[in-house]
Length: 350
Image (cartoon, rainbow, N blue to C red; front, side):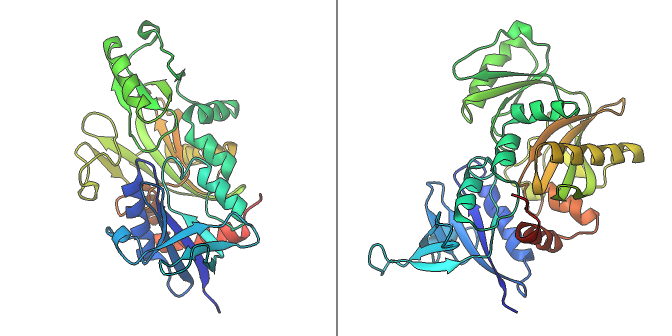
């Protein structure tokens, strides 16, 4: 039986470029070589596409060829050029499915998904609409609230607008509305700190989100599946010693964080675990997610659950939360990859 040809796209032009490379390395270690023939397509920080041998740390300096995903849906593959070929001459490599191991802007925001839709190649994860919706936290909150899911109170500052600091009750969090991880996020405890926090967020996005600080535990839930056929991994809890959770901001995250530990399974009551999983699946469906996502929530002292955010392609690194939650539920990363690739080929309803 022929192996499935899988295009694995990694890198990208967002601030999460190095995280994507680490995720792709973990994918490479866990992809079943008996079932899949991988084609690794790295995108440099400048936006150049290269077909390379693999996602090692020095991939750009290895054996790479210029490549492009064809938007022609009759091609269904990569156009690859060797340096020695004449201009305009390309080799075509057909692909059965694409696994976009990309985080943040131009990876999870619908841009890559739009190109994949044009290509006609099945791909893993959320479609254009749900990717864009989940990336914009304010839109995700609005849709989730309309489905009866609790969200923080929030305010939006667009363009060069400002907000009267006296209108807010502190503390608040100031965030880029459309960015990944915790890049550009500031906890503001006093009115005097607000403007500086807004300027920090604007380094990552022209649209800035200010949201109330929810008092409660940070809880995550890994979801896998499509539409009504969903499964939730084990729930985790982020235990903080001080400050707030700043994923991927450490110098060496593989060795742990200086202020946080992910506890899996979460040390919360059984009824809270069930409520978190049910809420996470409700959020996933309301936002139109497919394939996989990590839904982050707050668990308040009174047992209520409040939406934090949704990651439509969560980290797959050795220290990432999603694969740990799935592993705790008895599904190792290799099986997760099998399932999401199968969903991309057979379970999409576009």
